[in-house]
Image (cartoon, rainbow, N blue to C red; front, side, top):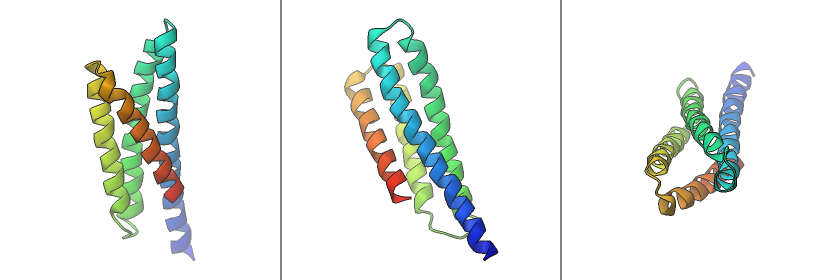
Length: 120
């Protein structure tokens, strides 16, 4: 019974990490709209990018913690690592001001994050 509770907590942390990532990606879409319509949008979007990147790193940490001690499937680690790669590409194309890649990639990341959250 104790092992089950420990496993449940690890999966809860993983679910929370995915939810935080999903929320930060959504807030990036909101701040992107503000970026186009207000003077403070750029500051919000830039700060949000850092928070979103941190949330992606938290997702990797949560996936490793859920996998390693319990001996579960490494699949969440691969998914989380893939998100971190996508977040890295997103930051690079955002800094380079390539909206033709940046915007669709953001939509893809949000959809994949919602899917990951629904699967957990």
